[in-house]
Image (cartoon, rainbow, N blue to C red; front, side, top):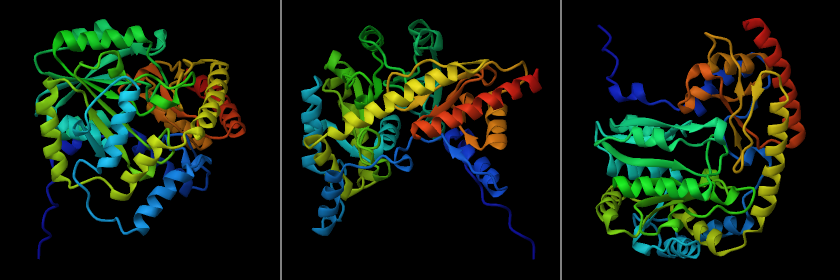
Length: 404
């Protein structure tokens, strides 16, 4: 009896890549060979000793014990949406509760918005380097990510001329990640106003990824929409980072108050209906987070700022390497001066195999493979980071001499 052929896989899967997790498969091989791997690839504070605030845990525990474990409304529970609305109004972006959808983390909010806005063949402007979820979701939709440049020689700020030159009649949205993952950049007000001006002049809305807004080293970052509450801006955030609860997948999507976004809002709600709801008990933590004690953030941000300085100082001291100082979050995007023909992936995989240090190559974030960028997550304790940077320095010197 002949064996049936393999089951068909959709062609769009070929374009779906997610380097942050893809490199883990190679790390597992290194571990299987007996080497300890030091994971600097995923921005998850939990494995590095940071903890979820107790009052969030209590809110979820109480909800489950009270038996509130059924489906919620697809847009989320009213108290949590009211808390998000109050938070946005207090930060200068007033919106009605009806324009807020609770989501399974920022990631689901992004997918709902892109699903409502981009057809197959449409284009979305995405910064490079970028968070690869955007390119993965667009590949799944059959839409196209068009990269606009951010400049490492100017603090990783957007190149506005390049952004404008990439706009076409097919452009459906401009993605703005600020504070930025993967670079740790924080955009000044002038840059943010310029981005809004491009949106207003072109009629193309902004998708504002603001999940790291409370993790700026100089204090919380203003919401982009606070600079122009009537601009066409959709804002995304969650409890994952600033509230140290990434596994809870508790987030929200806020659609700006302009009537220009009414049809988009209706489309998002229709898609949200199709997935029933985000995780019910964790929605109660949104209320607890936004109306309760936030004192943990001060200690968390201080710890991150210390690690950011250590990272910048140590990586810039390595011959052949440079690093723009991050201003927020827990990422840095150093650059190693690779010889011609050597890629960032070559460097990162060699670093992993020879030292057990796992980073992510810059081309996984949309950077040219020959430019030598890679992302570091600096959540580990300072002494562990210092040892890691010692090993990166020793490896890099040896690697560059071998490759030259």
